[in-house]
Length: 640
Image (cartoon, rainbow, N blue to C red):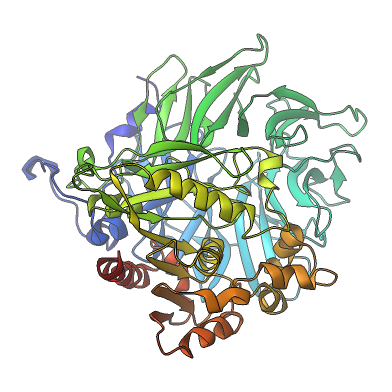
């Protein structure tokens, strides 16, 4: 048994009581639970969401960044031969949350960011969370701390209140001394990574507001940012990782028209063009070098199933580590290269950490699935393929109730995703599962503009929001509703953010197609949105639609507010009292126009403060998410 696999003896079963750190129960007196329950809102809210993990350098411990019931926590899983093997949430910053954990190279300390007074700063502590010490103090936010190879410094991203350059890379000493700023680029930097000798830090940065990301490096002592890519390199590039000898970096770029794996020399004098080492007809991401430098672990996205694969640099051959349908993320090698550790989620399992020995097999290292849930009663989604209006193939997932039939056809709920640069995957989507268990069919299309299908497909809805992407949605919905087990006369639509925009576009441009609609923090007026949103929002709109100056008529033509008079169906809308990305005042005229009509069937709800984030982060805003989903279920019960 490998060193990694022994961690699997510790299961992670969280609930409200566990998060409150109730005393552990003696496993000898606990009766086995026979899972027999359907998915409910409480099940969803108490299931922890693992966002990140860090494997101890000696493979004898695993630190998880997870969130549940409104709190972010670092949870430690330990090898059964290591002191403190019981693991659990660790007492750290004594603040309101902790996340972004990283191990020192000797495995004796962890770094993380802790929240105090709504500001996140860098802390260090021992693996039990004792003797926590705050390293950074300033007005602003920190994230992604990374230990230097010699354990004397930590690099991290920092966004200062007084700065106008967004997220920059800083370094702080562990002992005495002041932090120093490494980058001050006009736009955000991301993903800092130390070179093996500790002299350089690789990072991802954007050279301009409307251009692709690039890969650069900077001396850890300070100096100019050095671009590692040729000046004529056009691809969006990110995710650089050092080879074990420090001579090369592996990274992701879509220079070829889809995301592939490249390597580039780290030495400035070399200046050779990056080499595409792993390519596929599918998009590839998240490369990770093996400790001996001979293999690269990476992910392959096939229609929303994200597989873990290995590429041998000597033989030039690749192979699947696992063929199980689902979504892998964040692959990381163990210390001796005998296994790859990765997060994995599927349609019937939430995201957990798994170990995949190179010789074959798999072992679960964490377990966040509520023990009383019966996964056998969950719906396996079907990959749906259809030809759109221009003969382009579009895909999506259909969650059909088990008892749907010709005699008992199911009502259909269409769920456009947010973004639009996003994708529905074959991962853990508990609300879709809950709706299917309650008798609704749920269709999640990946319309043009979605990620995962190459650059051309992702850019197809640039300057065309609510046009070809909406036609894809309508064509796909018609194809699904033509099935005998689906009711073609009872079709609803529910979207959040960009999905909310597409929902409003759908019901104002196809007013007789849907029986009802639900939207949250959608964008009915793109012109007003551009003038009132955040800098992040305007930058995104610039890339998707072009600057408002020179494109005013385009913004107006694409906005659902233009067709608000066509709305005929019952509409449930959720606003955010404090939601700077989509301020309420940009939405108000659309809904004012509906309210003026005596026959309107509009139901509006306002999230207090910043609780609108509960529409997509139920783990951090559980009360808002509970109210949100309950209102949706009530609405669907009446109108669908």
